[in-house]
Figure 1 (tube, rainbow, N blue to C red):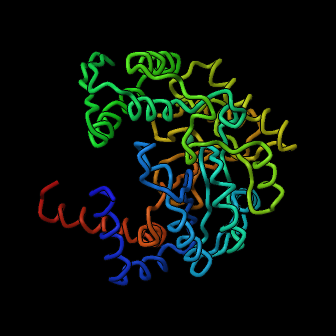
Figure 2: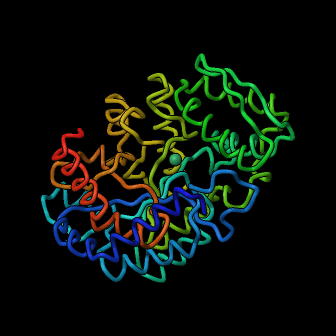
Length: 355
Ligand SMILES: [Zn+2]
């Protein structure tokens, strides 16, 4: 377990063990928390992938679902939309489960757990990924840095010169962490050309669907249909090729949203009601993005801006929390213990005139 993650888990366990979690849960009972997951895996840490943060150990997900079933009320995004549009209330301590991107593990590993605990989730799919036409660009970067036989490369990007060391797995992971923010800052058309050039410089082939390590593989459309038919999952949109929409021009942005909607309608048989913005930070979508998503017929959209859904939250900018890495972290996130600790630290620092 990486050091940062280990300390997060210890901090979360301390907050829950101190009783702060049960106190704060009462305080925030009327707000809804939306959790974001990506893939699950039985083999987290295997050397075939550098960045495992998008793939949670299946046992951690099972423990989190047991907690949700016992102490919270899991509702669907459809319930949330209905409550908002009709002005009705959701149950206290409501939680929404979401998954982004559309990994096969959502079907193979998550669905049986959702069924076991009778929980509901929304899976936001990147439709070109499910079609098998478009590998996710960040998977290509992970595999290129992870599989290259080179020891280092010098890379110019955004006016900077980066020396990317590849001598060990740890160095490859550090190079990935340095490169990703630079890639995310590029326009979408520049980004795809940059990934092509990176693969060329690293002397690795663009991966095909068959080359993907198990945890990275997409859902098939049959799996997505089975999930929708199970009654435990709604399929939502997450663009066609997973660009950061704010880095697209208007025409590309519109096409990404409408193609995604049309592919889901063609394969699942109904219009998707909900959407999630890739990357989802404040700079990753624009006012135009919100309008285009609404115009395409979606009823709500999720960001990755941390926060809870209260009466004031916009249905097209629903806040979410990133994937908790353990049941402790889930409890600290859901209960509000993290925010209480943060508020307390801020007020202490203010009192000491440090900020
Ligand atoms: Zn995504």
